[in-house]
Amino acid sequence: MDQNRPLCQNGGRRLAGHGQRLGERKRDGNTGIFPWCFTPELYVAKPDYIQSLAAFVRGRPAQPVDAFMRQSDAVIAHDVEPHLGKITAPTQVTCGRYDMLTGNRFAERMKAKIRRAELIVFEGCAHAPIYEKVDEFNQRTIEFLKQHSG
Image 1 (cartoon, helix red, strand yellow):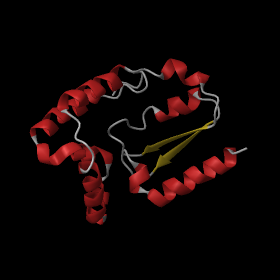
Image 2 (cartoon, one colour; image 1 turned 45 degrees about the vertical axis):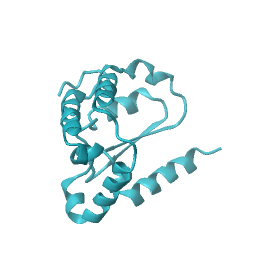
Image 3 (cartoon, one colour; image 1 turned 90 degrees about the vertical axis):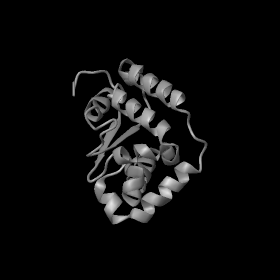
Image 4 (cartoon, one colour; image 1 turned 120 degrees about the horizontal axis):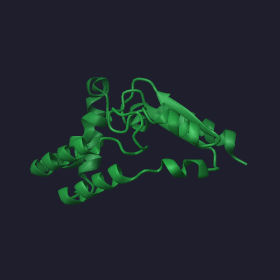
C-alpha cells in the first residue's frame, strides 16, 4: 500500500469488485462485506452475533450494485486531507488493528493533522470495533465525550 496516497482513498476497487459479486448473489445482500468488517475470531467466538448483524443488514433495503459501485468510486475519489486542519472540535479517531477496508495506515496522519485529535486503535478488531468490542468502544467513547463536554 502506498502510505502517501490521500486519506480516504483506500483501495476501494477491490471492494467494488466484491460489490459486483454481491449483486450476483442476491441472497447475501450487503453481508458479503462482513469478512472485511470483522475478524475471523469474532466469527468463531460469536456466530450467533454475526448472524444477528447479518439479519439486521438483510432487513434493510438492498443497495443496487450500480449504486454500490458509484458509492465506492466516490469514496476512492474523495480526498479529505487538505481539510483536516480546519477541524477545531475535539476528535476521536478510531480504527481496528486489523482493518482491511480503510485500515489504520491513515490514522496517525489524521491524528497529526486534526488539532486536539485522539487516536484509539482497538486491538483484535477489524473494520468495525463498535461491533467487535462493544463495551470497550462505548466506554472509550463515553470517556472521550465526558472529557470534552462543556
